[in-house]
Amino acid sequence: MSLILPNDILTSTMINTDAKKITELLERSVVEALPQAKSIQKKLESGETLRIKLGIDPTSPNLHIGRSIPLLKLKDFQDLGHQIVLIIGDYTGVIGDTSDKDSERPMLTEETIQQNLKTYEEQAGKILDMSKVELRRNSEWLSKLGYGEIGRHAGVFSVADFIARDNIKRRLDEGKRVSLREVLYPLMQGYDSVAVDADIELGGTDQKFNLLAGRDLQKEFGQEPQDILMMEIINGLDGRKMSSSWGNTINLMDPANEMYGKVMSMRDENIITYFTNCTRVPMSEVKGYEQDIASGVNPRDVKMKLALELVQMYHDEKSAEAAQEAFVTQFQKQEIPEDLPEVLINEDLGIIEVLKNASLVSSNNEARRKIEEGAVTINGDKITNISFKVKGGVKPGDTVILKLGRKIIKLKFK
Image (cartoon, rainbow, N blue to C red; front, side, top):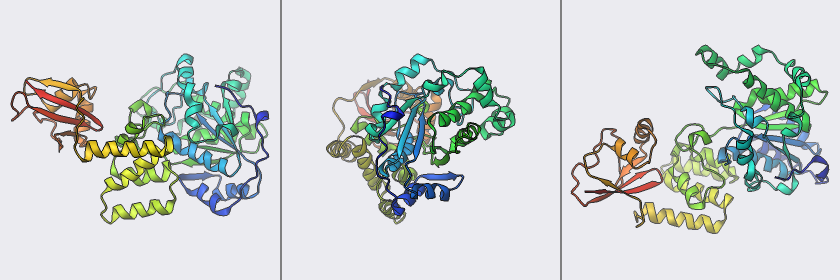
């Protein structure tokens, strides 16, 4: 990945100070602005070119649409003419951020990090104009720090500051281990802001401590403290926070059909949240969709509009239309592909055993959860009883269609 250093960036772009655009930028997807939205608005209206920072750790090879929320906000700033500073955390990624974790996060190897980040520039380029982005790796400055410098950074904070964080306090109260390594992460992310002289940093609500660390360290080094915008965090396909480690993601690099199918498999209550945070469909339209659902329109119809929009964003209009046609053919018209994987059944098996034998789940617990979530159907009938016997009433030679989310297999009975 080639790095674009500050001196290579042209900052002669005219700054757009349109009040309506600034207001939407500060409101859409933004949960909290620090120290306050008014101070950020004043800076944006001044016409000054601001340095807008976002750091992403390459802990997975794929960026998902949860990560697209701050990237889309970067694009909003970029469209106004401000300088985007995108930091790939090849050094922080090794340590691992503990902000949203209920247990100690294992260290990743440098080899894993380097492998993961190979396509990050390409993935970010699906949203940003990368020719105008200042792209950095934080190993540039973090790898050069010694104990003396790290000691200076650490002196800005107290242990009480760190352990007062909700997830850390909860882990300590539960008797779980909190490593000293985890204490280093906020110092590293905070020093990133010093290294790039950030004016505004973006992050999720779970990043508050780390974002504020940047302000404290900038004060220590004589810089004006950055402003902060914290974005909403969305749920993944299974209702939990979207996370690569849980496999409940819609990835920016997913093939068009797969992306469309994933969107259609998500929970209805997340439709408007996704429209608001993961697209730039005008909010007037989004509110209209919300009213449609409230007035009794089938949420599936609105979800199809969302799926079409997201596939268009990351592929193109033709691919999106083809993905929609394939979905309608396969799922709405109930035309099942002929080349489905086939699993032979020769005894009365419980639904949990069938799901495991077909490699659709990795454990009994996952099978139970999927059944209870209503994600499992046989011949179109939803299975909600974890004790359901699959072969009951079926004659030898019969076949049935088993679906788990977007996964489909054919069960054939001996």
